[in-house]
Length: 310
Image (cartoon, rainbow, N blue to C red; front, side, top):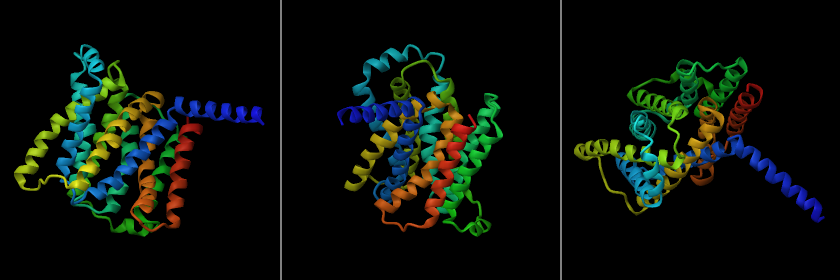
């Protein structure tokens, strides 16, 4: 019995390390954190103003990194003389721009539109990899992408594909679409990131994100839309700062290193499906058959692109 248990243990550890080394487990954990951020974002409505959430989250992360990683940051800063523009764009677009545009667009467009537009992130990423890096993709990989996008459409329409004919694009749709393009650009930029530690890289971009969010916060205050977090808002803010903002971003940097930007971007399609499941569990939303269908399509698309289309 003990020998069998040891065999099972070695099998589990070997397969865990295999998934981790290939980046699959890392990216799955990241998507879970980002999907949970959807629930947190819904709970944040009325508890903290949008730009306050964007700015304070990066302030908390920046302070944490400075307090815990001073030596790492100091050692990496001397290696960044030729990479400041890339780091500035990464923090401004991927961290500040994406969140600011997403929160702003959510005030003017429907949830169906937002869910469908979020599926454009891997499309932007793959097209960007093709244009910028001349990355070639097989027909099978594009087939996998199509399946994942089909899953997003099923989630967005709740299984009623006829509702697509009633969609109308407005300024909110454009803002969310631009936010997705920003994050795809950030994902692609990680491919040529400076050769420093992931913690050092993240700390610098978090500082950039806070600095570039301050003007947006100032505008929110000037326009009269700012309000301080409620007690619940502070709790939500701390959760978002720790998990979706801090831990997930470090993991995502590592995942891109292991699998490449295009394949890492494909995993983003899991967010609407996982977010729907978490909404069912934590927000009490209804469960339907289309959730199972959508999850199957997304997972099948990732599997095809990862294994068959490699």
